[in-house]
Image (tube, rainbow, N blue to C red; front, side, top):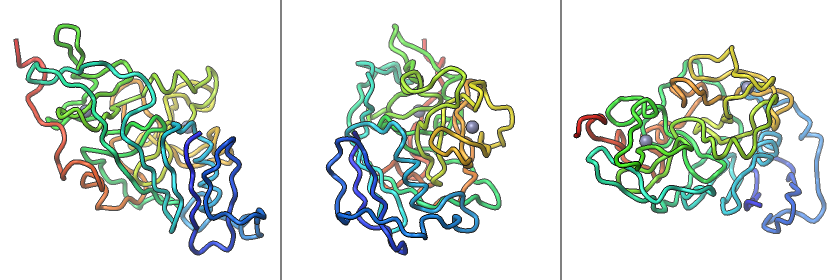
Length: 286
Ligand SMILES: [Zn+2]
Ligand SMILES: [Zn+2]
């Protein structure tokens, strides 16, 4: 089980205690579970759920064992070593025809515990746009050269640019990230005929899912950010959420929710603004 620390939720009069299997790392929680009437209140105007309901839903996701999720001060901090809990290739091809292995790249990202839809969507940035339940991170559809990453996949002598989980590292080997459905994650968790299980969170705090809508088919009512409102396994009462798609754009082109501008410029521990994946388009070489 992943590690959860509910340090405190400021502005809340109670503490939600979550039973998470054999997890003993719930810190600073009173002995007596205390759920006051406030927990039944309607969510804050503009948000879908109160912070505690949102948090308990998010924690139902299949988070990797070595990830730390800490709720404090109105935000959920998620930390990991950046290495996903699934197999990686020994090598990934680069544009210059060399190749690279994945190296760890620890991160901490913060997510609002009461995500709010924005008046206007904002384009997603290069670099991290969200974290995955595997410990990997999500990037938007594009490489630094503007190409849709998955449409530009290639291999050099059998070593692919992007693996079958739709992920690969930066040219430095760091920041293993997905540009689309992380099949090695969804294959583990999704069930035919049912809505996909949580695969991650975007930086605006709204949850991210694989390609299956409530009936198991691809959703037909997605907005331009690949999102819609509806019930999910973790949010049975409905929530705005994103879907990765099996056709372009595969990943998420825009944030529907309010997102911290500092985060959209590359993330707290991510690459510099506009940084990331530069290089000539594939196919330029021999
Ligand atoms: Zn990439
Ligand atoms: Zn859905």
